[in-house]
Image 1: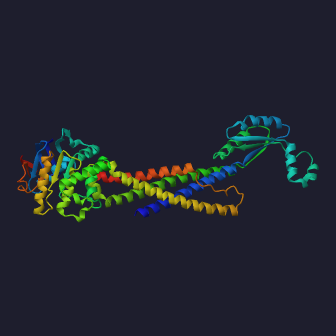
Image 2: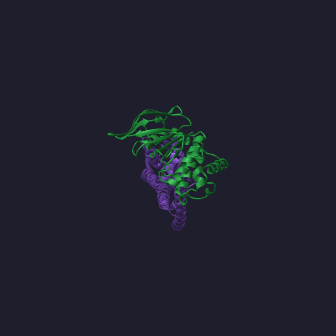
Image 3: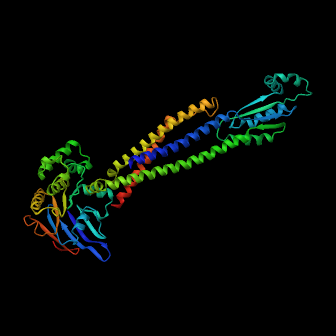
Length: 277
Length: 218
């Protein structure tokens, strides 16, 4: 029974850590993607300086904005011709200057990037002198919402899995207590305290959970190594190809929380039995 | 040392087990608690070590009202009282030494102190050479002596015995009774429950007779 419980705890652990890893990777990918997203506000001719100053004094001063860069029309033309030198003749023959000055607003990589971009767009729309605005707001908002959904899913699954672990421990320890009930009765009659009687069962509960946790972390480690190898071979250089395992502080936290779960499950099993005798 | 004040106990509404029990047991007494089966002897003993609680009345042990004790206080009380049961209540997967040592381990004695006390008690009950044996390999008389040894190892002020010779041959009964006599002579208050009024003929004792839940003689 104890072996079955340990294996069950390991399976629960694999599910939980798998969800956690997916969430962490998704979040990490989102933040990396966030480094590349920005808003570009194209400025009307003859109002460039004034409009630029208004943008720099309002939108660019927000906490969620990482940097603002002003690009003059000449600079825009330079960059364009660097990428497309074959079009130089065509550009020279154009009437007027098709290139516009622009302000590039870069946002800090956070989970609320989508909301930040929306706010900034609203602010920019109120500033006169802006010809038009380009942004990747839609993508950023989608990512942001997915993070929220994943986060809530992860929380809910974490609570369910913790409850399942608690129930498993409680059931296993209850069965062990049943097999040792004569011994417990004798200890109770000769003056052992409830806590003194509980100790070996609490130790057993903690041990079972920690062994299960260890097995699940090992399984996750091997699965992650395989997945990382595959991703790096198939999608080398992509922002989602670098899978990260858990940090040592995270592992210490898992050990601590698991020990508490194991101790608590065992303790309520013992307490329930002792109240009845 | 032990006082009962108007103690009532019933498990069912129409059939009270103990009715208006009033008695006082002094330090060093040897009390034989006699009466037919169902008279309430076991219930009375259980109340002294808080395995049962009265529906009404009070029980004082060394001046403390034990009918209101909580679990921590109950555990402390039981560590100061020795109890011997008819069915021995030994832990089968512990040897004789470890069975006797259980109360001392609970008290947190060091290994050295445990060894000293257990050896002394084994001599008292005449089981010196049996320390490493397991209870199942011993006779009924020997198992009961282990149970008595365990009840004495932490030097209790009170020793309760609930039909300790009930599962033994008549030839062993005398041995056990003599042991209790010796324990009492060393100063321990003994309450010995038995349905056989003649069992303790050879022991100087006071008799408490229970019949239908009432004390009819003390």
